[in-house]
Amino acid sequence: MSLNFSNNHDCQYVFRSREMISLITQKYHCNYPNCTSSYTTLSTLARHVKYCHELIRYCCPVCKKRLSRKDKMKSHLIKVHNIPNNLINSGAIEEVRLNIA
Image (cartoon, rainbow, N blue to C red; front, side, top):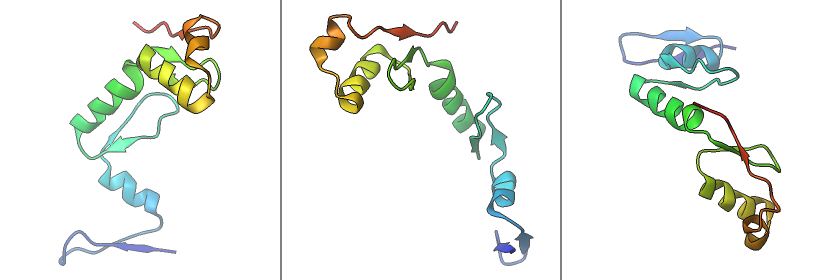
């Protein structure tokens, strides 16, 4: 199956899949392992790297979700896992802090 993708009236491209279109339109790809994100601008890629990879400091002890701030992890534990606030504050839930320079 081919997809027609036209960026103007003078030029017509035919691609075999949506992934092919994405490879051409998304110029900037994240190079972190297991990350398949790509963006049209370098500044958007830089923002992705900063917030999704470099600022990750905490790991949820229940589901291993990675979070950038301790307060966000606490909120995640309460909202997602229904762990009571007093249990978190008592230290019963062990904090998992990632060693990222």
